[in-house]
Length: 312
Ligand SMILES: NC(=O)c1ccc[n+]([C@@H]2O[C@H](COP(=O)([O-])OP(=O)(O)OC[C@H]3O[C@@H](n4cnc5c(N)ncnc54)[C@H](OP(=O)(O)O)[C@@H]3O)[C@@H](O)[C@H]2O)c1
Image (cartoon, rainbow, N blue to C red; front, side):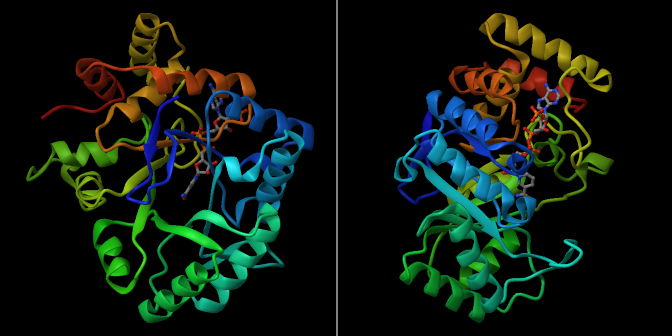
């Protein structure tokens, strides 16, 4: 496993992290085995959110730590908030950065996680109705109470980061974004600047370059998914060329294709973290092996083009 400092927080954590979004579907013994598997392979960073399984994923994760005999203070725990689910229908009906919502959500999440603080909290998705002064007050309360040590955002573009940062006393250390060989838009846009083809459409405002400039850590979510939870690209016939190149590089490195897909994200000098979402211990072990693989620049480009991208 390799480790990195998250943003400029000073927190050193594993470059491969476990996301527990899907942990609500697992039994307590299964969850404990998952957590034990990744910790034994050097993972020290865990990501959750108050809305995953309506809080059940975080509860299951806290119980899994206990059952696996892992001390909460030996790991880094991150959660996300700011998405409002209607308690009756369980549907997402708004994003909500109001002080009352965020403070109550964080308290609920601390109970779910059975802890008195989280190391990081992220605003999950942008709330266009955000009142910046109110958000600044909220972050001050969360910080001074000791309930949150560090802050970040998710699914926001550079202008949105700048706007939020302008109001806050705390640094935004993290931006969590979908990224992987099945979702390469942030890279494609860097290659198609000032062109007229469809790939030149700017969907994110230069997020990778901006994050590097600001020393924000990009956390790559859904690193194996195609589109928005449409399935994985591994062994997917629609990604035959990508699977061929993954296999070729995997053979050279004596690991699996899934390890190479992780290594591809880590090879980028933006110093990203990868959030794994599998709940299968054997798959997780294969994926984590990618943290110790070093791809050449040519292999990185070969995988990028095999995923269906061009080089103009
Ligand atoms: N900020 C955001 O908006 C946001 C959004 C989504 C996710 N996230 C974070 O990112 C984390 C990871 O997301 P994710 O779970 O979508 O990540 P992922 O690792 O891309 O996908 C995991 C899913 O793919 C399946 N899978 C993995 N390898 C497979 C294979 N070889 N064949 C078939 N199925 C395979 C897994 O099944 P098995 O469990 O059966 O292995 C699991 O259902 C989440 O836990 C969460 O922390 C953040």
